[in-house]
Image (cartoon, rainbow, N blue to C red; front, side, top):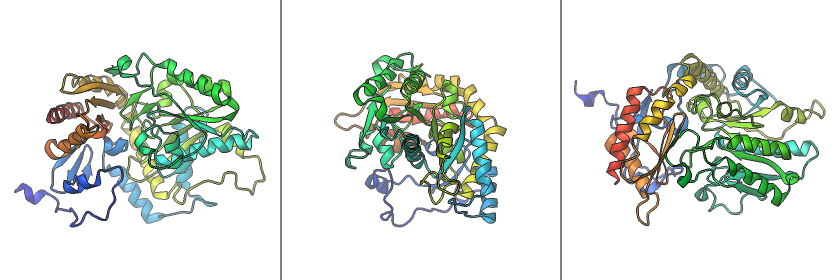
Length: 447
């Protein structure tokens, strides 16, 4: 059979002008579109019928691979049964079932779930709950929020305020007031080419004591950090760093929030990175992997004592004036339940742990490719720093993204001149080899 007969019909629209694409160089994209028409397991299919190896799980989302039948079927059943239910003053069974399932996976004590629709919303939810918690306890002076340099916490005003990626902040005014930042945990000279958690850097958590000394503990509501900062280029927490943050927060009555939008649901080999590191925060944000990327969903896991602090007034009164029209959307809940079933039945968290050493060795084999300055790995993730081109930071990374798609049939993510690799957890050993082979060719193509 002629291969053209097996390809899907071209689906590229005649006019690309109307859609203002997010986080995209729109003019460059529209000159040479990277258009996707289908997906299955480890591959996307382009509008011209090529199979593209997905080395990034969509966007850190599709941990169980693409278009999995159990999730598809759960979505279809739910859409035909209950398409929408208002989340204010009404409920539906799947919301409570999914909350129970997520809480059962979380560290002990994180036993309440507040649902939203994205990682950005989950961060703003966590920050608002932290501020409101201190207020309802009569400690309303605690309004200051502490983030970290090079942190990414979504694109809401709260998230970009505590975030520390300059391009996400610089166009949007003064943002939230009363925000400070810890230093980044990444210092290349001390940590280059590290597999797993760097030995150097735990002391950087002590900068929180300096911030407390400047502002006073009584003004600080919460600290928010990613256990592994993904969007900025896979920056791994040093050994002991998160433990020290926990100790300092406890000493000063500050809430500790882990942003696990990326690290949740198996990316680091556990349901949550908090389990990997043996540190229980007060709030965990999640999104992405909860529905395998099939339906937008996010949320926050909250300690019982935080929840209980709100349950003091009259029974008929709303305890927290916060939420979204699509919180705990029935179709998202159905996708989440089916996704958790897949993770359990296929033991994907355990699989990630087992594959981590092989993955790390494979990615580190790229260290001698041209312009590679550093490689970092943890769980089934990797960040590969390429040297920037003269007077054009980010150009080499963008050329790599483009060449990977058009010439080498692989999807990679870029953060400036850093390549990020984060394949679905179903990746086979042979596919790990294929990813590394293709990425090596991509790196050479932009030398």
